[in-house]
Length: 328
Image 1 (cartoon, rainbow, N blue to C red):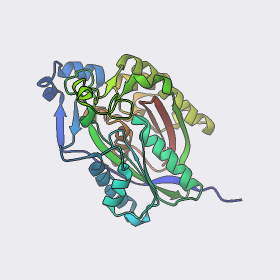
Image 2 (image 1 turned 30 degrees about the vertical axis):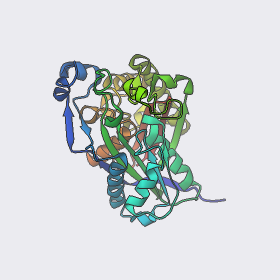
Image 3 (image 1 turned 90 degrees about the vertical axis):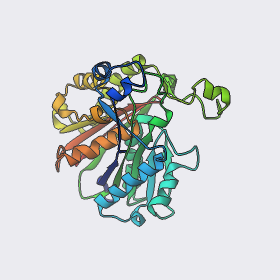
Image 4 (image 1 turned 180 degrees about the vertical axis):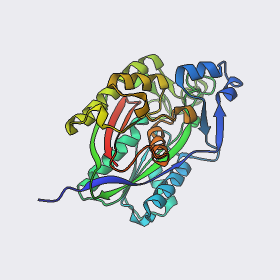
């Protein structure tokens, strides 16, 4: 009988663009106020990528930092997964562009498009490949340039989103690592948040551009209700097989969507607020990159220690959701 391969995160890296867009800046752009944004979302500022800075550029920098943290060269990577809803282009995959930029071998490289749940989906996929012995090291990157698909005339959405990237190198570990993962999706609710045009359903035309269909459209009220429910359920489904209770989890790193959602999820799960890691005030919602950047910062700040059990929990367009338990 083959010995179980424990799969863990052995390197982390993040990249945030230099430009900071504050709520005060947004007051000059649309009819909104710092007080309104802060009260309803918990966001104070967000990062915005340069015009010449694409998703693959941010992903590449995050990947290099993660490789350096792991003490590995790009040649050691056997699989590259990029979670993004803002690829450089429809094809080739952003993961292929990153493969070239970091100088990796001609290993499998592909994108996944599950919005804010992307980092968790990517970790779960890589865990299966490494745990089965198919590959030894995988690079999972979550990168988004949401500013490119944000309607800066729509005050209900433009206050929410930011840009950024983070990456994790996964490989065999002696013990612990990824203990369980739970993933879900409900396509019936896909209309709640979407990018209507640019695909085969509505190809780009002058009319689609004039109608502003190449920007994020969302039903915030309905999303709020579903997010609270499924994030709490995903956490329960990920921890139940392990027999873990709320007090057994050292830190929960949720998708940084909206402070009111996160507070509601914490309450529903019976978690104290000091166990919820938050950086939404600094970066806003970076879709797939949100939980990835939060993980990098939590480790850097010493919030995660050897032996801690942490829970990543996310919800996004699709609708999709997922949670993953990792013993550090």
